[in-house]
Length: 76
Length: 76
Image (cartoon, rainbow over all chains, first blue to last red; front, side, top):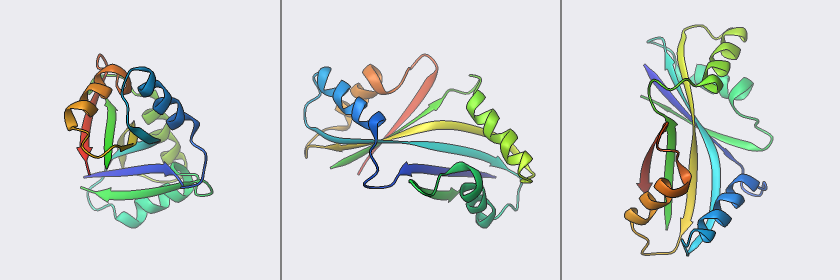
């Protein structure tokens, strides 16, 4: 089975990577980009029967820095 | 309006970052993690009326390295 974890910086936390992308898009002629936030996505290939709770624990312990990042877990 | 771009390494391209996560999860006692792939997600805040085609162009020109990465665009 598969799980997908999306980790984004929390609102209010400065995102210099996203800001750099926004600036580069403007330089390439893409107008009207008001904001860019960049995060990461982690696709896990798991043993059948792994619970969403286990994946949440993985996030809390390793995948996300919960001080500045929020995460979302999708099981598939 | 918003768009979300997910960029992943193509299958067959070595993903050392994902491999490091898989190893770290094992070291933390999470068994049964067969594979991990790590990618990035880019959330764009766009002017109303921006087409998906424009976002695809952003991916081709800047957001993804199409030699080794694949991308998926979701408009919201």
